[in-house]
Image (cartoon, rainbow, N blue to C red):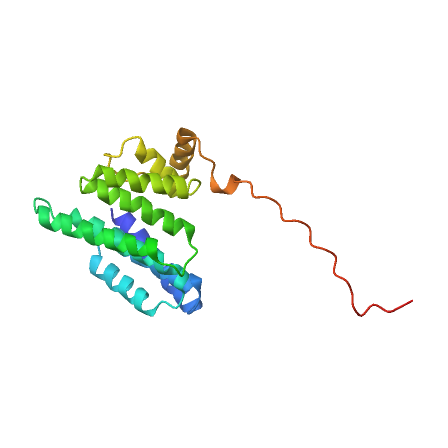
Length: 210
């Protein structure tokens, strides 16, 4: 276990170096999000939430906002598991998570399709955790239809086979390949987009007359 903690600490040091090298960029926000996620994996929840709130307040890149909301939602989802036997606290944390996923889904100033897909998928997952399988199914269907080739659209298709299953589905490459085959989906990278028509040749207005 010390070995895993050492790897997390090493990752945090790498992220801190990146922050110094890239003070203002998409990478800057992405790096802080990864740092927050690492804090969560190390069970350093105060540091995680403190960083997430700071990113949200200071973020100057609107496109990243849904990702921030999603990670805060995941924080509250995980917090619910630390309140065994206290149903009200569990459901309160899960309802708070729902609120952040809804914000991520509604946020307009972002074209991050995967973040929007993840927010709808996690809305379904949390509804299932709250025992509301009809709403969970609706969210899974929305993710599966609107974001069919997104990884989270594919996870939603898997969940539709058993909406009552509230376990986290692993997203490693081998697992995702299995889900794509299981659901008959096409990975995003393989989706064929229509070719753009060739650009018309520009006319040189300053061409010398013969």
